[in-house]
View 1 (cartoon, one colour):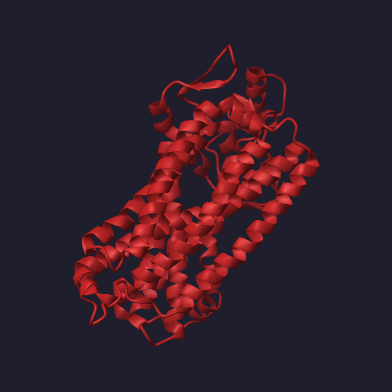
View 2 (cartoon, rainbow, N blue to C red; view 1 turned 135 degrees about the vertical axis):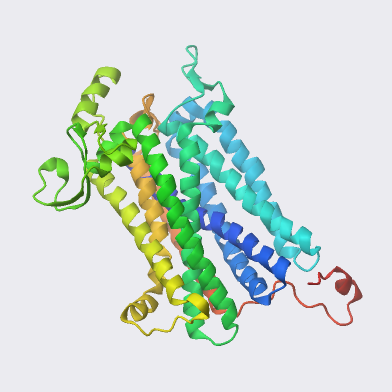
Length: 470
């Protein structure tokens, strides 16, 4: 493999692994804040215990996310120094905001939340976790703004003297139509991931123990509602994002359907034995759906790969501007399909536990669901991963669409041996982190949920004064 191919592989491994924890950090912080708010308003111990359990999951996930995020920053300089030098003035402000503002908000107030739970007043203690949740949203937005520039470059110009990109309007960067559309879509997917994790833990523990049963029921129902609402939001925001994507990157939508010829009333294939553009012997199509997804008009014309390739060759010069079609086609369907399955499972659990009912394995579907509970949190996480793979690979051969190609961004002096060594090191570290995180999650899930605020010692006057009462 060449240095370019190894650099792309390394970036994919580092980014995909890091993103396994990002959605959970976003959703678990908001869910912790929501559960604690319910406890603060009602004094119901079920919400307090659920808050502590979700908060512990957040702590473990945040710690691993920090380490993987640092590796992400490191590999930018290691493998993509040419890209960093060329577009550093554009990316610098967003990364600075993420690191110096959002991250410090999250880390500082998460520490205050954990160590101040028996020292701060109830309202102040609750405010700390809301600051953490807001910080994760700020962090997500600015990082997505940086990525949106790669999808649709706005707010910058090329300095003719240095040949580097110079940021002209930070406002334009933050209001890029791609980030405006992708942010709610990403956050909705994050809530699906966090909700599915809580749903799986709640159902598992509800069946495994009779102690604190109401807490596990609350956890399962909150997780199910979060997954269901997140799934509905993903569908709505994905529709908006698809239309923006078609406008700024029509090749990406054509690649998602393997549509080689420009077509009106274009169908969308749910499944194909062979890719549609390769004379598939059989495919399951929904008539006119691709035209609707792309433009909102089921009769509209969708540009095909062949016409777009000819257009880009005339605009940017000779070259192959077609992404890897099989990857684009199947990752797009896996993203949708896994998300739909997770949403359907959440709806089923809510229906089976309605009006105070327990989730008793009375039906065949119940027994299979309980047997494969460990798969449930994987579904929305895998859907988000396939979504990012589609987003990034279907943009190729561009690092910044229309301006900067991937082959030009690799560090010029980097050798394949150095890349293999660094990739092996990253894989080793990530393997250890995966084991640590999984063991921590299992440990937290198996333990009985503790109360949010420990009871003060009878002879500890100072503790009694500081201990919040409900």
